[in-house]
Image 1 (spheres, rainbow, N blue to C red):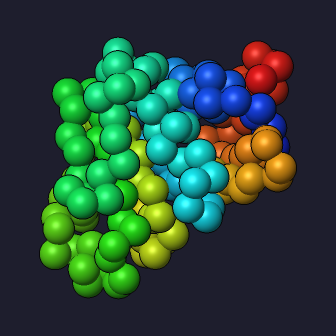
Image 2: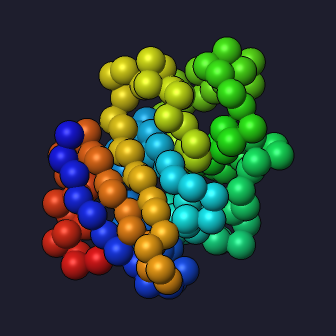
Amino acid sequence: MNRCWVKTKSVEETRRLGKAIGELLPQKAVVILSGHLGCGKTELARGIAEAFGIPAEEVSSPSFNIVHEYEELIHVDLYRLDSVEAVEDVGLEELLSDDRPKVIEWGEMLEELLEGLPVIRVRCKQVGEEREFEIGDSTGKICRKILEKNL
């Protein structure tokens, strides 16, 4: 898996990084976002959504609804779920077979369901006022392109 690290200093930079990732996602891609509360996962998801023409203000953390489906993208937040069985109960396994890219916050527990899918893992952490994103890319293209864009 290719890895790269990107730091952002503002919400706008975090969204710009998300948009760059979104523009590079292949069909059926799964983006797993992990990191502590408030580290920038939802802002990154908003940027990814913008790459698909979804206004950032329409993207909220789906902590209470768990799944938000858009025409071009699926956004999932598994924060309140504590097991793969609970994930299966909300129908995520079926959603994973959908051709649309998926952005899944708190999706670390899904490893066994992701086999054969293009997976991008993004871990974020807050370092002072900055956000640091570690991107693991099974497609081999996203890190290279992001670094070329100088984000």
